[in-house]
Image (cartoon, rainbow, N blue to C red; front, side, top):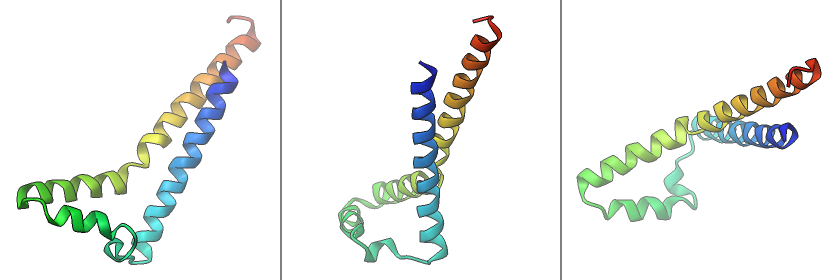
Length: 94
């Protein structure tokens, strides 16, 4: 079982790292997402009423900018649990 958690932990760490890389690339490259294929989403959001549009804008921005933290933290927890179980079974206490 710890091996499955390790694989899942590494996959989440890689996904979080890639996500963070995309965020850095977009911000450092000064890319305007409205001019990419994601522009369709922006045009759809433009049709919403002003309060909903503003709320959706901030929600998507927060998700994009700090969403990578969730898979990184989850991967660290999974990898720590897998290592704890492995060390406990090696000590003979588990």
